[in-house]
Length: 529
Ligand SMILES: Cc1cc2nc3c(=O)[nH]c(=O)nc-3n(C[C@H](O)[C@H](O)[C@H](O)COP(=O)(O)OP(=O)(O)OC[C@H]3O[C@@H](n4cnc5c(N)ncnc54)[C@H](O)[C@@H]3O)c2cc1C
Ligand SMILES: *[C@@H]1O[C@H](CO)[C@@H](O)[C@H](O)[C@H]1NC(C)=O
Ligand SMILES: *[C@@H]1O[C@H](CO)[C@@H](O)[C@H](O)[C@H]1NC(C)=O
Ligand SMILES: *[C@@H]1O[C@H](CO)[C@@H](O)[C@H](O)[C@H]1NC(C)=O
Ligand SMILES: *[C@@H]1O[C@H](CO)[C@@H](O)[C@H](O)[C@H]1NC(C)=O
Ligand SMILES: *[C@@H]1O[C@H](CO)[C@@H](O)[C@H](O)[C@H]1NC(C)=O
Ligand SMILES: *[C@@H]1O[C@H](CO)[C@@H](O)[C@H](O)[C@H]1NC(C)=O
Ligand SMILES: *[C@@H]1O[C@H](CO)[C@@H](O)[C@H](O)[C@H]1NC(C)=O
Ligand SMILES: *[C@@H]1O[C@H](CO)[C@@H](O)[C@H](O)[C@H]1NC(C)=O
Ligand SMILES: *[C@@H]1O[C@H](CO)[C@@H](O)[C@H](O)[C@H]1NC(C)=O
Ligand SMILES: *[C@@H]1O[C@H](CO)[C@@H](O)[C@H](O)[C@H]1NC(C)=O
Ligand SMILES: *[C@@H]1O[C@H](CO)[C@@H](O)[C@H](O)[C@H]1NC(C)=O
Image (cartoon, helix red, strand yellow):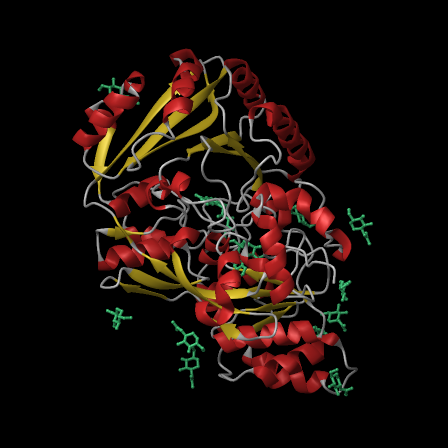
């Protein structure tokens, strides 16, 4: 679906519908819309800004960035606001607050639990930043301003358009939104050298609960700290980010070497657990585990894909692999040299001969049901532990693990530098996921995932059992249901996502949004006064 559909509807709303409403009773609907239009400084009436359930484009706009079928039939917003300008966001915040409408903020819509477009409290408004996606690249100063509604693919594309020797350390899936990804951390194939997306933010613009537009200087260092890993949705609407571009070499090298259980996957994985986080920071070697056929009779096995991105030429990579992981047997013709932007295509699952324009495509590759969870591993998992893990994965063909090595730059940044606390001492992160395409399987698959997670408890980080905010999981402890955002309740998941940074996040939240306007099932709570 293309964007122009957003541009054909709204004049009707202001020009025709409002006058009709004003003669009826004073509903939230009409008051909110009156408030909203009266606050618009930029009242270009040919811009489509508000969609109600009566608007013909309402469903397509709502659906446009729903990335998980589990939430297509959830509660629906009263209004969807699609700002083109900062004043539209300011008006949306001021008027939602005035009329006690919950707000959901959506950039790319990839939230694993749909928190950017589903609300357990109704009525609610979605502020959807799909139209705020400008990007300006400043090669001379090695920086860029990126709007929250841009997707990562657009950012990578725009950088490559200007220079082949700069990149940005963020995630692999090009349709992810900048707003959620940066504010929750954001890691990708070069994070062992450069850290997270959030570690490379230089400035930001945010609309706070009072509708004020703030930058780094005017928001202060506490809030600027909080939005670089603490999640944006507790603090305000982040419009745009200034980020540091990072150098990448003209030639990078990839390989993907696969091992099934019959080919010694477990032994290779044992070695990987001890070396992956100690490899040269230019060398990213992650593992994707999934179910495969062991033979034509349908017997199942586990297949591990050892996939590499090396920031340099093949000779240097082969020498490093020979030094640290010769058992994997990587040879020259397993490797492909390419440019960094081609490696972005490669990790996004495209052929490297694809046109770069595929990175600009915002539509989802697939419509699926999905559930995911995360863990951090600090001691190698024993063979017994792995055997049980493989057995459980084999129960579900559509299960997958992504095992992401830490170390390098990630170990050099202190736990409290940003709210993202998973730094020194982690060997790797696990993402467990399962997908399915029939709603009838939903309950069973959620239960399966919870059993798998329970099984893994002895093998992963403890007290707290750490988790990655951007792999949002509403199973983690009790949630802020029924407007209950008590500290005790929130700390069950808060400590997992943020460890000791949780307390500082609560402190910042209490200062910046004491009335707890920006809230959801896992937003940072306000200290009782
Ligand atoms: C297919 C897929 C692949 C992924 N791969 C990676 C990966 O490689 N690396 C990685 O680190 N993560 C990855 N993730 C997780 C991803 O980082 C998070 O889902 C991230 O939050 C997505 O951002 P978004 O803007 O698309 O999400 P949204 O759903 O729009 O937002 C997520 C959260 O952030 C809030 N938010 C969004 N925009 C703003 C804003 N402008 N101001 C304030 N709050 C805001 C929302 O309210 C919501 O709470 C992946 C997710 C998916 C679905
Ligand atoms: C409708 O509500 C708004 C806000 O509460 C108020 O300012 C306005 O006077 C009301 N209008 C009528 C007709 O009651
Ligand atoms: C607003 O309009 C919707 C229908 O579009 C209705 O369900 C809802 O009750 C209205 N809200 C108020 C407060 O009048
Ligand atoms: C109003 O917005 C439209 C669509 O973006 C644009 O073409 C037009 O120039 C704008 N008009 C003014 C006065 O800004
Ligand atoms: C939607 O349209 C119906 C019928 O035209 C009307 O009765 C109702 O008030 C409208 N609601 C909103 C929120 O526009
Ligand atoms: C939105 O998605 C739901 C579920 O897939 C579907 O029933 C509905 O028709 C979609 N709406 C639009 C406008 O695409
Ligand atoms: C959503 O609800 C519609 C109508 O009840 C149903 O046909 C559809 O299958 C549901 N979709 C999902 C993904 O649950
Ligand atoms: C780089 O930054 C300096 C100082 O902020 C500024 O004067 C200059 O215009 C910037 N360069 C470009 C190309 O924007
Ligand atoms: C930040 O905002 C302040 C106050 O509006 C302004 O004076 C300052 O120039 C801004 N800083 C930057 C870097 O834009
Ligand atoms: C790696 O290269 C060797 C030698 O050409 C080949 O036998 C092997 O199949 C390759 N492995 C993969 C995973 O491509
Ligand atoms: C939630 O709680 C706050 C503070 O206790 C209160 O002001 C607000 O009205 C409540 N909101 C809802 C939707 O219950
Ligand atoms: C809120 O949660 C806390 C901690 O779980 C609980 O003690 C308290 O009773 C809850 N309050 C309400 C109003 O549900």
